[in-house]
Every structure is written in structure tokens, then in C-alpha cells.
Length: 258
Ligand SMILES: Nc1ncnc2c1ncn2[C@@H]1O[C@H](COP(=O)(O)OP(=O)(O)OP(=O)(O)O)[C@@H](O)[C@H]1O
Ligand SMILES: [Mg+2]
Image (cartoon, rainbow, N blue to C red; front, side, top):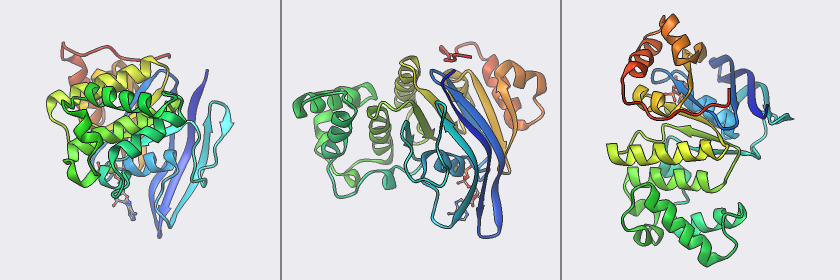
């Protein structure tokens, strides 16, 4: 099966091991939640997967993307797109949003002309709740709110049509309606065959999007599996919270190829 396989990831900064022996697999078409307390190593793991670790970080481990080795030291990751937790640093501050989205849509062949790419960018912005997408497209990142920028970053990542999407807290800065729209957009990407790592503190969102979860604490995975597996273990407080969320009635469709 085509999948992203991360094995035995360790990240050291100065003399501190911040991620230790972390292994994860994401299949195409599957959304996996990575859930854990603040400071547990989620964003560092996301950065390792997307080739954007901070300078000075020492990384070890193996990454394979659809059967191809992808050295963790490399700064490029063909086939992987990322939504970073900090939307302000993800967008070029001096370039208007249209000039950041259109080239991505053209590169990934979502559109073949500038006009078609612009139209697609508008409709993607509408799909995540923007009522005036033309205004957003003419704006500079600093002219948007944090939640608006976050949604633009999600669109930028989805526009890459990458095989895998690493989404680091993509719904955190959003109101409930926008959250649902972003979850729908991620669900559609999974349905179209993307593998998604959904990093979040929101156990309800995790359960609504994902078929299984990995729980990280202190830089290591302490448990992972389906929500029913986590319910049978429920040793970690995060597993317990996920289990309670999974028992709530109104959870949406989940995606898995497993
Ligand atoms: N550039 C850095 N230099 C030194 N330490 C770092 C750096 N980046 C992260 N850390 C440390 O690594 C640990 C894990 O950080 P990380 O950002 O991965 O946490 P997180 O799980 O994403 O937390 P949050 O939920 O708050 O976003 C923390 O203790 C953090 O202080
Ligand atoms: Mg983080």
C-alpha cells in the first residue's frame, strides 16, 4: 500500500532530545490525528516531516514516501505539503495573496491559465468560508486576521495536490463555522486520496476527521491506534479524552484505507 512511513525519528536541539524514537505511518486516503499536550513535540515532528526543522536541530530516523527514501536532513519533500502552526511565517509578507496562490495552482495543474487559477482560488476561498474572496486575493497577509491567514495557508497547501498533507493545528484560530468548513476541505482531500496528519488539541475535531490517532507525550508516541483500541487502553489522559469524544453521537464520516 502507498504510504508515508516514519521510523525512529529523534530530534535533538543543543543537548536536549525533544523527540525520541517516534514512528508513524499514514496511508493515502487516511487521516491520522497526532494529539498531545503543549510542548510534547507535535510541531517538531511536523517540521521533520515537511523538511522545515529549525537550524541547529539534529535529526535521526528514516522517512519513506510511497516507497521512496526521503532523507530527513533534506529541506525539500516532494509529495508532502504542510500547513504550519504559525500562519504569519508561512506566507510571504510582501506578496499579495493572489500572487501566492495562483502560481501553486498553475504548478500543480489544478488550472492551466492565470484566469482559471484565479477563479479556482476564489472558489477554494469560498469553500473555507470567505464571503468576499476577491478582496482576500488582493490583500497582503498582514491585512488579514490570524484565522483568515490560517485558512489561506490551508488552501495553499491543498492547492499543491500533494500526496500527503501535514496540518499543524489548522483549525485552532478558527470560529466554529470556519472550523467545520476546513474539516470538510480536509475530508475532501482525504477522499481524493491524500494522506493527512492532523495535529490538534481538539479531540472532537480529531474524532470527526480521523480514523485513528497517535498520542504523543514528552517527544514519544505513548499509544496509537483506532479509537476503539484507544478506548480499550485509555491509559493516557489524551486517549481518555479521545475515547469520550468518540462516544459522542454526532461524529462525521471518517477516512481510512486501512
Ligand atoms: N527551535 C527550538 N529551539 C529549542 N527548543 C525548541 C525549539 N522548537 C521547539 N522546542 C522545544 O521542543 C519541545 C516541543 O516543541 P513543539 O513546538 O514541537 O511542541 P508542540 O507539541 O507543537 O506544542 P504546542 O501544542 O504548544 O504547539 C518544547 O519543549 C519546545 O520548547
Ligand atoms: Mg505546535
